[in-house]
Length: 491
Image (tube, rainbow, N blue to C red; front, side, top):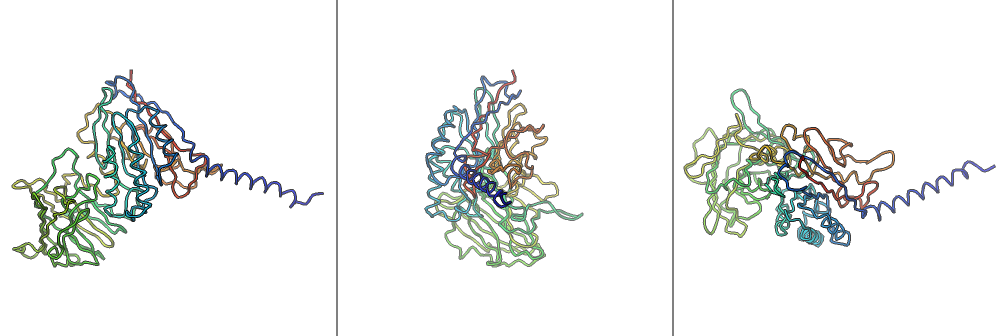
C-alpha cells in the first residue's frame, strides 16, 4: 500500500508544473498578446456627424525602450484607421527616472516616447494626459514630457480643453493632468475662517503643495502686474509662499515665487523652471513669526530682454516699507513672460492666505478674500477641482469627452453632462489570479471598475488595461489593450 507522502508527490509535481507554466506564460507571452476591444456609443449630441467617429484609446505605455513590441502596438493602432487617438498617461516606465534626467535610462525612455508618438497617425489629432509615472517631485523634469510630446504634434490636455470638429460633429475634449499621490503627500487648499472672515488654508504635507487660480487656455495671458495679499504661518509651520507668472494652469512647472522654508527662513524671491540672474538681491530679510499676518506686494514686469520681479513684506500691524526689499531679473532663454497667481506650502503646520489682489495697469482683475471665491482655485494633485473650469464655454449639445489617468475622476462628473471618460492606471489588475482576482486594487471605485466599459448613468467610463507593465514584467488574464470606440449619431 503506497504511503500518503508518495500519493501527495504527484499532486505537488503537478502543482509546481502548473505554477511554472503560468509564470512562463505571464512573463513571456501574455504581456505581448495585444487585444483590440470594440465599443459603440450612440449619442444625440453627435447628430451632425456625417459618419461614425473612430476613436482609438491606449494607456499606460510604460516605455523602457523602443522594440518590436512597440512597433506592433503602433501598427495595430494605425491599422484601425482612427480619426483621433487618446492616450491616458504613464508614458515613462517609472517616475523615479525623472529624478535623473541626465541618465542613460531617462534618455532611452525619452527617445522611445518620441519615436512612439511620432509614429501614430490620426488626421484629427492625438490627445494625451500625463499619469502618475510622468511626474517628478516638484522638479522641472516634469516639463520635459510636455516638451517632447509637443515636438511630435501631440496635444497634451494639461488641465485644458479643446474643441475638435470631426466628420461634421463637434467634440469637447478635456483632460486633467495631476499625478496620483497618497492623500497626506500634498495638502488640499480649502476655505477656512471664523464668523468674521475667511481665508484659503492648507495643512501639513510631505511634498510641495500648490493651488493656482485656473485660467482657460483661451484667456489672455496676464503680465506686467502687481500681486498683493497677506499670509500667515500657524502651529509648526516653517514654509509658506506665493507664486506669480505661474504656468501651472497650463501644465508647466514654471513660475516665480516669494517664499521661505526651514533651510532659508527669510522670505525671498526664487525661480522655478527658469533662473534668476542673481540671488544676492532677491532676499527680503524678513523672517515671518508664527501666528502673525504678513502683508506682501510683488510685481512682475516683462521687458523686451528680461523679466523683472520685486517684492516687499511686512507685518500687517506695521507700516508698509517705502522701498522694495528684494529685486531680481531673469534674462535667461527660459524666462517667464506672463502667467497666473498661486499659493505654496510644505511640511508641518497650517498656512493661511487672504486678500489676494491682481492689478494689471489701472485695472484690478482679481480681488479674492475667499468669502465667496470668485475664480477656480485648483489644488495640485486634486484634479477633479478643475472640472468646472474645463467645462466652461462648452455648448450644451456638444459631445464631451474627458481624459483622466485614473478612473476615479468619473464619480466627480455627476451632474456635469460629461458623455465619456477615458482612463487607465489599473492595468486591468495586470495579474488576475484564479479565484482571487487582482491582488491590488489601486482605485477608489473598487474592483468592479478595474477594466472595461461601464455605463454609470450620468456618464460612460472606459478603463483601459494599458499597453505596458509596471513593477513586475508580468500579465496574467489581463492582456494589453487597444480600445476602438465608435462614436455614432442617434439615427
